[in-house]
Image (tube, rainbow, N blue to C red; front, side, top):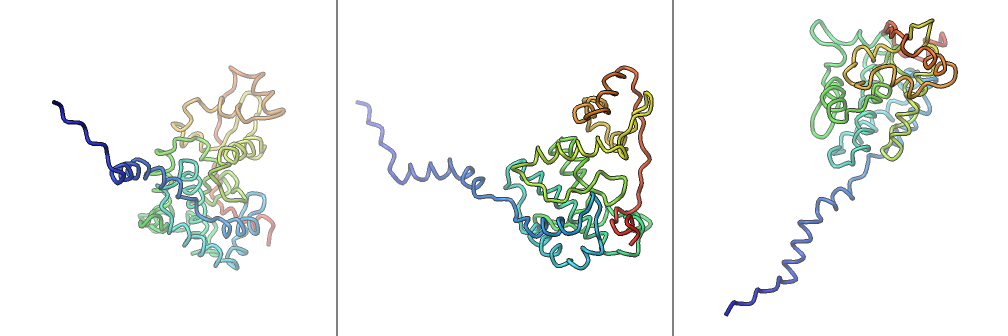
Length: 260
């Protein structure tokens, strides 16, 4: 006679459910960092995509406290869009912090660093128990992990050549809309994208990071172009030549633009 199979005990069932559901429970409990301080800082001191660094200096405690908040977050526990929003915010906030280490005595972020290292090689960003460089955040994490060409219009290197800095934090729940809006604003800004005859002048990021735009420059531009720009691109399709604008490394300082 075959022995009857013993029924699992209530304790065994509970242990099994805990093991099965614990990853989902952890993911459900992980929440993005509170960006209230950063939102307040950006709303006060980002104007027309430029940074009022003098004002940020006066509100330095807001930035310091926000960076402390970021340092306590485990981004790996966040869902994908929240992770990407976290890293974009971290990159931009730590870039501002880096500029403040020398402001107002610098004309370009490239003035920071030494003979063998530039601003993007400085180990400054406290993230998940590590101290990272800006290059590590962008090129070792954001680009290879998320593979989203739109990030080039969101991360800001504190130069006039960069797409404008958004005056609000990036948030996972609306990230796609924010990234699309960044692309749309940049591409439809005549100072950043223009067409002369059959020559389309575009941001240098399309040249530097061409591999991140596998669909090609023109299809990407067309996706976000509006009005006359889009009409001219469509009517000239097949004859359009891509040209790259010179990069302006001067500091994206709102005070210098307004002559203060």
